[in-house]
Length: 225
Image 1 (spheres, one colour):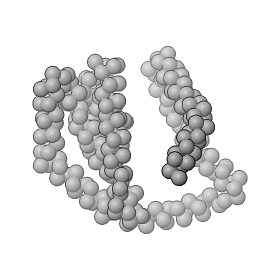
Image 2: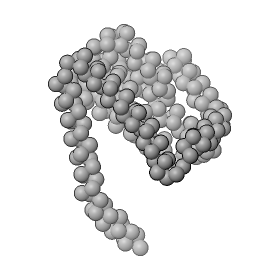
Image 3: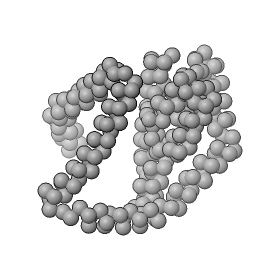
Image 4: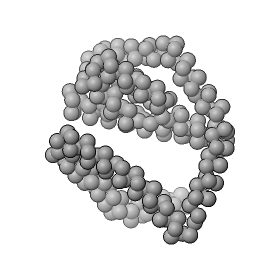
């Protein structure tokens, strides 16, 4: 029975491979074309175009919801009001979880735990004979799974201390965009529906964060080292 299930899953994966490869290849080409297009522009032109495109995309998303509601004959305004009511109830329900995670973050930073951890990583990298330039930006990466605002503060601190155009400042900015607020998200979403046993969610989330951190370091060394 197990063998039949495995074969069935394998066959489904094989059927989806062309579709997945096509979607992934198309996305990669779109990103590459976007990067190439912006690299050909002057700074002022790039700022203008990026702002205009962002506004058009945002307006297009809002408009698409309205059009979809009209097509499905759904009263968009009433649906929005009902969703807002549920959102307010959910916000009240998750307040205890948010307080707990924010207090834990405050204690971790005030106790000097972050400084001890960074010093230990720096010592370990030096012991292995590696380059320690990336260590100065690590507080942003380590804080991001806990708090987005805390990671943003660490990023600003890195740019203030080492300079916005320094390797640490640039890497801190890459960290800010390559990882996510894992524990904050788990506290909000699992707490909103009353789930206490998150099973493998924490492990998977932290592994994804680790992959983002390693990729960010590699990209920073490739472009800025």
